[in-house]
Length: 378
Image (cartoon, rainbow, N blue to C red):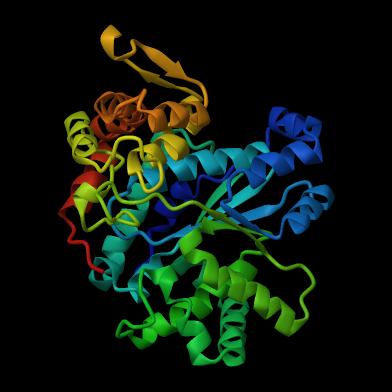
């Protein structure tokens, strides 16, 4: 199988060779409690909080693992939320290893199983994070195909041991990690996938698994494996929230449905159109995707949300907390007709540097053109 050329991999690894004195100084001045607060804020769920506090107390630079399948265009959760989370982790003194799971995408038949296309998508995704403002100091991008090949003698014995110790029904319960269910007709490759993802955690020497709630089951499998093998230091699971789709009844965004999400290089008019069509029932907060975008994207990015409206509709108002906005929305003091244009404006401000990068950088422009020409496969 063809891997990314060595020079390209080297340029994409974006690994800081030296930790800057200023960064180390700020981390050293931060209390353990403050570092815990920052790291814990990323997760909708943490297994277990006391283990996380103990880790931060004893280890100056814990290793956090995150991974992704290069499987198509990047939506705003993968782009902006990941940037917010990674920047929080590195600010709290963590090292973040981002696993570019190209072999896994091939196992899961993404891009029709074409590894060359998958790796093009991987390079495109890295370009987006660079343009979005991810602080790449103490971040390492690792291609799974290259790393597994170079350290096969370490990797495959772990995979085999995990597979040997678990019954098939337990592995099939992890199928959600691939966007599958245990009712789907799975290939043998997709059965093997959870064993490999579980092994990744130990292979990368991760202290913290920082993935979405949809990856929870395989992370729990890793903790169970530690019990089974008497490993003392279990990986801490820090699972972030999953943004829903923009349309009514869509529990998650879908790359195969362009109207279900804002994509990172969407034009301003596309963002405006998608938000205008989105589900946003008056007075209702729960299950409202527009309010989810505000809570998990806009407020963490700007620390405020500005609504411009006519004086008779309440006039201009800047919300400094999500709770303040929720209060107005539930009472009917903030209407969807005023919220939606303000949300579109905020999202477009976040995305503009990405658009500029893909228009002005020839390499990024070429990557995007190729990715848009690929057929997304499930």
